[in-house]
Image 1 (cartoon, rainbow, N blue to C red):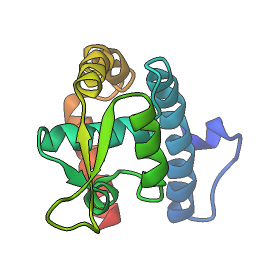
Image 2: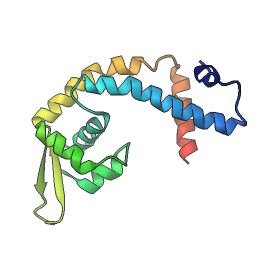
Image 3: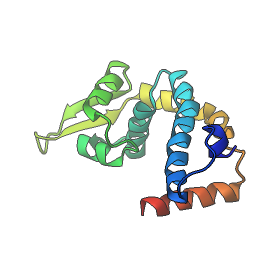
Image 4: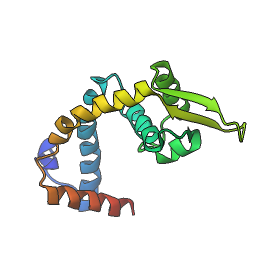
Length: 149
């Protein structure tokens, strides 16, 4: 559906304003698809992002700064997110022996199992985006990369 129809607006002053409104509206739509999916698994999107970063380095640890730099939502409070993951038993936090000022975070076996559980259900989440063809999905993704350019 066109953004004009979604928000019941006749037109925009220019195409860049339309783009901005469309991006903001679409971001909210995407969140409405994604947030319940992760909530059903007892996670937030940001917690899943941290767990995925940890899995990418598993079994090696990852320091807080590296997690922060690699997150999709860089405004997230990494300390709070990691505290929640530790509470759930999905991660551990230790002081680095080589540099006592650094904190190392590791994925636990329970965290790895949680990610595997989420992975099993991911096709259902991705299915919500299949109103685009594969070629269209690649094109939109490339255009978003260019926009952030």
